Image (tube, rainbow, N blue to C red; front, side, top):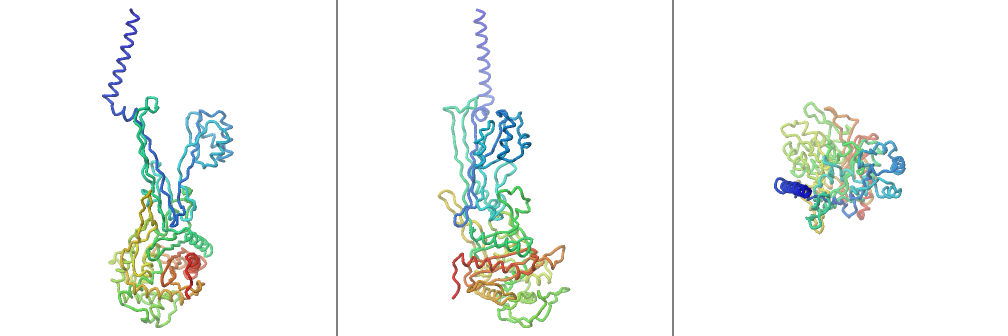
Length: 552
């Protein structure tokens, strides 16, 4: 009888514990039961969108990598494990030995590729394992480092695009994560008839760039040769379609290794083509000349008496070589790149109209190009300008612009007067949906007639300029040299220049426009002797690449 009472008492106590537990779980803490104790959620990461050039050649893809980890408690022979791992990884036995903390259950070692994983798997080591990871891969290495940007980590450890296309289109490329919910028992095992919900992820969108891999290869190769030949500190080349300002190539050096971006300082990541400002020098002259012709203030055959330096207040403006030809035409002003002649053109245009055209060309504000990191240059308010400022801006000094602003404005001069919005991505694709990016006209700056006049003047500037370049035979090419002194602590250093050339071909119906820039070339400070030869080397290759026949 006492035994029965004892058993009954035990059952009563057990039953009471169960009742109390059920009351707590179902009444006092129902949400913790349904959501925390039983329902487990796992995030399913989407695949990042791929990036291709205009013809579908891959520039950024995804590659499966493997995180090598060690489970110290499963290691049978630590010394053998360390020696074997080091024979493949070459991390140093002391480093590997320090990682294996026997008090830990799991230790990450290194992310490795498929071949390395196969080598380690073949060693039959106990206590190691591999966890699949997706890593960004760049098949063309750093061919277009600044333009592409890279994928790094944010503060939470999530993948995120930085700079270039990867940064600007990060949201499109990232996609939407999925989720998998499963109901589990107290042992964390799936409940057979429990809740099983799965929402598939949406992979990121694919981007098709206007970039042409072949043109990019030509531009980068010529820039590398140019930096070595002319001993320049740095440089940029941009090639675009002047009618749409689609970017066909964009390269600046020095650049960085996109797959090992973490080995470089942040200074390398900034794209000088969109993020650095400079004084453009004489390549700016055709913009002012076009404005004056558009406003009927001058015509190409009007004469200017180039008889000596021009005095503006306490300043004297001279020609670049301090020689003067007497009466010359407006066309000759561009041919010989006369600074004093341009001051005359600016005076005919007037300060109000001159400032208005600087705004019309888009200076002082971002172009809106679809690359992360663009700056707008700097155009001071008009009431802060002095007479000397209006004089020097006519030949490209005293104004801060970016290379992308410069090539856009120059394109407007030769494409019929249309200021276009430059762009890099021409198509966004996701499944069966494709978004085609159309060229966008921002404004009409000059007329078709003025544009045609300027193209002829720029052809003359190439054919009758101070330097005779090795131009491709049978082709008519237009362009302009530039040599701008670099301002340092409030004055110009005559020994430090930015040498440039901007040109287009064929002149009657331009297929491409290219801007070549060199910062501080040592062999010669002049754009005519450094940047210009580089442009013509590029032009020769592009004329062949685009199968453009010579004129009869």
